[in-house]
Each structure stands twice: as structure tokens, then as C-alpha cells.
Length: 358
Image 1: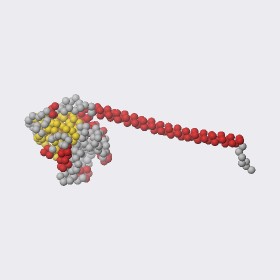
Image 2 (image 1 turned 45 degrees about the vertical axis):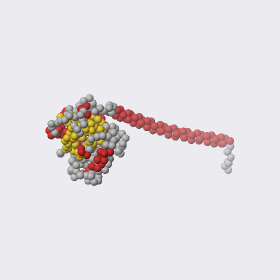
Image 3 (image 1 turned 135 degrees about the horizontal axis):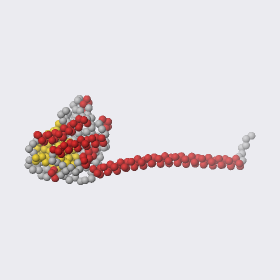
């Protein structure tokens, strides 16, 4: 018959066994805790490294921006002095070039085609025609210099997924390539004109964020980076000056005329009766509530309308007709950019379009 009682020796053995079991469990718990802490430590170290890398990148970016934006603007004397009879300043807008966007002709009934190669050719034509038109077609004027308004949407940008997927280059690649191309064009103007002045505002396609923002609109935009890089490149060249906006708008005085330069994406509407005229007229009126100007210079709408009597000069697009315009049933608009002659007494003496025949 089995024994139902535990003697003292067995009791001591069981007690020791229980203590050992508790010790083993405690060791296992501590081991698990140590393992968890080790894992958390590894994760923390990785996070610290990641934060250090982000900090280093932010400091580098801030250093670059600081170097690009470290001096204050002073308008060149030739630009703001009162003009004399017989003098004039060549004014032209470069905007809505949408560099490195690809427009496929088969998708728009072969009305247009656009890519980097075509854009380089059109940009070259643009600078050549600025010189040709003022040299051979509008003569007898003592030109004081040339004002090249950069009015935004220089790049196609990454604001839509379809653009990111189809653009010919990354944004940084685009900035590097087109900085060189524009610098060559500006040098060409500087060879022909005594002075070249370049006011610049940003568009909506150059922004780094998908959604438009009011704060840091300029400095978080690749159009701003392009203009500041060009300004840095021409530093020390007394013939070429820049005025790069840190906000959405920029006031530019040319002899007796005051221009307000803006991209144009602030205007709302344009699809009803009257087309884009009502929103542009409203925008002129609203801007004049806060600042004085004679003419508003803008782009964005990809339509060239020179209406000085209505207070605005609207630029076309170097890119031209595209897939968006086609599916939106917009009328065909040829690729073109605006040019005019500013003369004393706030006059726009002569105006025309620079076109790009294929």
C-alpha cells in the first residue's frame, strides 16, 4: 500500500525543489527582460543614428539655403532711374516652361510634342528671338537693358503622381541640368544688352509638397532654388542682377513703370462666361487694395493675353498644349512667351509673342 505521508526528508527535498523552480522562473523572466531591453537598446541606437543623419541633412540644407539667401536686394540704378524720351527697356516673361515634362503627340491628336530635347531647342530659340526682335524689328530705341521675368512653373515637378512617373528626370537632376541651360541664355542676353535684370517668383509646380501651402511658399520651391543658384552663379557680374521673391508676389520698378509679378495660381475661376478675364480682373482689383502697381505680370493659365489697358500682362506656355488641356476640352494654344518694350511715362510701346515653329 503506498505511503500517504511525507517524511521530513522528502519535505525538505520538495521545498528545495520549489525554491529552485522559483529561481529558474525568475532567471527566465530576467533573461526575457534583458533580451527585450537589449532589443529596445538596438532600436534606440538605430533611431539615434537615423535622427543624427536627418539632423546632418537638415543642417546641410540650412547651410545651403543660408548661403543662397544671405544678402539683401538693392535695385540696380539703371533700372529705377527716370527714363528719357527715346529710351526703353526690353521686358520678357519666361514661365510655364514645365521643363522635363513629357507630352506625347499620339495622346493629343499630334497637336504638340514636348520633352527635354524639344525644350532645349525652344529655350535656345527664345533667347535668340529676344535679341533678334529688338535688334531688327524694333529699332531706333536706346535700350537701357533687359528685364527677364521668371514667373514660375519652370519645372514639371512632382506635385502629381503621373508627373513623377513620366518626367524625364528627378527634381534635383532637373535643377542641375536647367540651371546650366538658363545660365547660357542669360549670358547670351548679357552679351547683347548692357544690363540684364531678373526678377523671380515661384509657381505651383515647383513646390516640394503635393498640397499647396501658404507658409514657406517660396523657399520650399525648386523655382526659388533655381533662381538663387543662378544668382549665386552670376555673383560678381555687374551686368546681371537678380531679385528673388521670398513670398508669392514681387514689386518690380522699371523706369517709370511699377510691375507686380506673381505666378497666377491665386486667381480662382475662369471656366464660365468670360473665360479667365473675370478672375484676372478681380485679382488685379484685389491686389491693388494692398499695393500700388501699373501692370500685373503673370502666367499659370497657359494663355497669352497682353492687356495693359486692363492692368495685366498674361504669359503663355513654352510647353504648349498637353494631355490635361486635351481631356479638359480647352482650345488649342500654341507654345509662346511674351515680350514688350517698356518706355517712359508707363507705356508699353510694343508687344508681341515669341513663338516656336517646329
